[in-house]
Length: 339
Ligand SMILES: [Zn+2]
Image (spheres, rainbow, N blue to C red):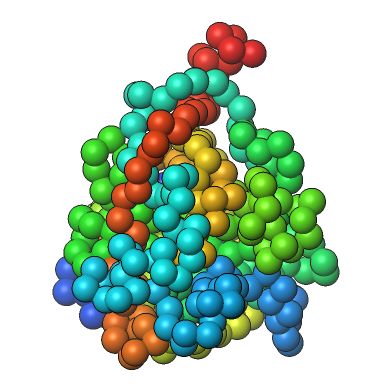
């Protein structure tokens, strides 16, 4: 249940973002109280975005950088998904992502909860960015604090670098992973790196260097159901390469994830964009988040490097090649069986 926060600028902004929606049932935003508050006590003046994003613009290999061409999702493009191997040989590897996942066909079932540090901490600021391929958010915390993920399949602490989204041309097409034969409407990726490597750049091509938390979205157009107001978020980063630092209307990571009570599937895979490094421990929640058609449509407004709206940005399904997929349940009934 999400309480309405009235008299709040956040609410008004969200409300404005809904004005193009003709569906009466989604005009007014309902906001979780945790994110509804306006926090001005950490006025951040500048961002040292040490974690950046994982776009090839920032982290590509020499061959990609020199060609002034980046990957695309267009099958007819010379740098479309089937030809990403031209940009990085890793993209033709045997442990690529995304894959099809089956919640009832996983190898082990046990309970080992994930923990996220600073899940409820309101950051100093948020950096919204359009990297030409997706919309990303970086959380900038007070002091030198970082948010980290641990537990579950992770043997170490993994520092959260950024969150970005994948989507499709229509409401029923957009997630990268397919779960139980279903492609969901969108997918959020929380990109983290193994703290022992010190930075995303150092970690991304190292063994067990990265972990990505994936959250699938399903459409829910009922009143107040949508978990995220993309209209407000993307407004200042429509153009490719643009970024915007939000200092006032802040929210915690909880706003993205909602509850931590979810079962998840974990497997060894890769980044789903070039350079496709096979260094990712994937953690994909089987509990979908909610998004309205209106909010999903906001993501399709952002533009690529050619100035065209990014209508879809998910990679085709890759071969599983007999990789293990482990299922982790949040319910305690499995605890005694395996621990
Ligand atoms: Zn991604």
